[in-house]
Image 1 (tube, rainbow, N blue to C red):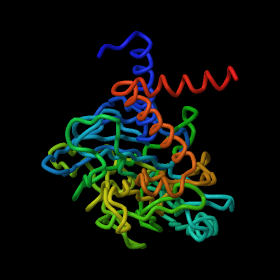
Image 2 (spheres, rainbow, N blue to C red):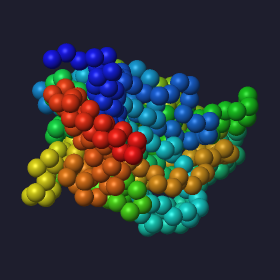
Image 3 (cartoon, rainbow, N blue to C red):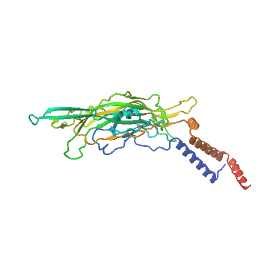
Image 4 (tube, rainbow, N blue to C red):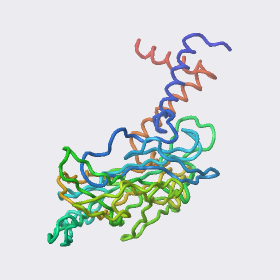
Length: 390
């Protein structure tokens, strides 16, 4: 049986419609991206004080593992160790600057008590003074002062997956997990001197303490997404502190001792007053999940883990700190988890999905009739035409 041009044209239109509807419901077409990227060129912020950025990863995922420094360190990153649309899932991260908190705006993801506690802190939290004899002038005493501040810093990391309509290879949403994976951060503690020859201010990191943590995320203001059953990160306990290292990946072979810093003729502690420090956060078991939460749901849901953390950075300041980063935390801070309900759940809950599903089903029926029983369609069209003539 041969088909005329009109039938072929209708078949192509229906095929394109079905492919488009499938792609739109599956998340669309995904362009490939670089396996490890970071978005920043220049500097992080122009404020005085410590600045933090993503620096590198040590990862284990499936049968692959590795260690890689970010070619462009920055405040965001996206990592995929293999194919852009198949294989292991992606790790995506973002962060705030290190800042002094202000304001009382309510937040959807960050619990009220987090922010209430942050803005209640009166900085500096302490001031230490010393009266020391001058090493240059006899019988002269100089007063030295060190202020101690508590600053806030937030970062959020998610396990994302690409879901194009046609995938060759393992699907990124199919329970792909990162284990014992370290996300490394670099602290830049050099201070800006905005005008030549003005007095210098020096900073040192006293401690980095986990203040709060949220595992899982929120799709909107009503619907929370629980983490996957296996999800574990380290640390998880409030009050936990992180070690600092002088080199990325604690690589002793690359350590170079920096120049000593001086303030009013006195040497500052070289172990504390440095230009760079490094630390890491561990994703012990972190990734995507594909499974059923209801006995009747044979297709299952798809979702990825998210962790959002709040840190208290204790900072020692010697000298006059004039340009401070003081800000409010943006509302709804924290990455949104990738979450896709099954076809069965969407058919029960989502009117838009119901409409497009029935539309797609109708298109498939038309395609089937065009190929195998075109006379049925001609008969239907004939009935419509005869009805209009009457």
